[in-house]
Image (cartoon, rainbow, N blue to C red; front, side, top):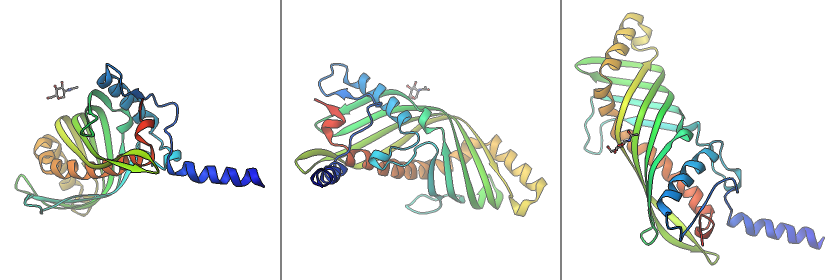
Length: 247
Ligand SMILES: *[C@@H]1O[C@H](CO)[C@@H](O)[C@H](O)[C@H]1NC(C)=O
């Protein structure tokens, strides 16, 4: 009886501050090659997080499901295409290559240069607008395949104390997509399924993917930054600073 009670109490206490699984290689704060250790550690952690981490209630990151990505006028950013992506499935994030990482412990900032060889997005779409003077309209399934996505990610936190332990309260996550080597696009059921019009429009989109991507990029940076903000809030909010960056 006593031990059951004790066990329950321990469970409650530990549910507050969780630990990362031991398969994730952590870094010592005093590591003279901190940035290189961090680079390897982030790369390893992303792979370990692929299917989620139940111990900290982290959802799977590959595939990563998102409810919505919207590209539309607003926030002083006119677009020619209104595009709504629903039930978005992103595959490939766990294969990210971390080219470099930088940390500033005092400012609570982490930056990483991330290169993704290949990533696939599948979604339900609703689109209406103009592309290179061509009208474009439809709704159905769409697939986008990204090759050679070069990005810089930036996370900023504020120090927070809970039950005597220090945590990083992540308040900002930014994504800069520096370059993209190739984008393949397919929208099913354009123009109510008109095959000829649909095929020719997909062809035009693929031949001019750079212009199409220019329309999408700002919204993508914003929406994925918001998703990664939530993911990093989960990790840093559950695991104390000393259990991420070892003494
Ligand atoms: C990513 O972009 C940066 C800055 O343009 C560049 O230095 C780096 O070599 C690129 N990485 C890859 C893998 O292309």
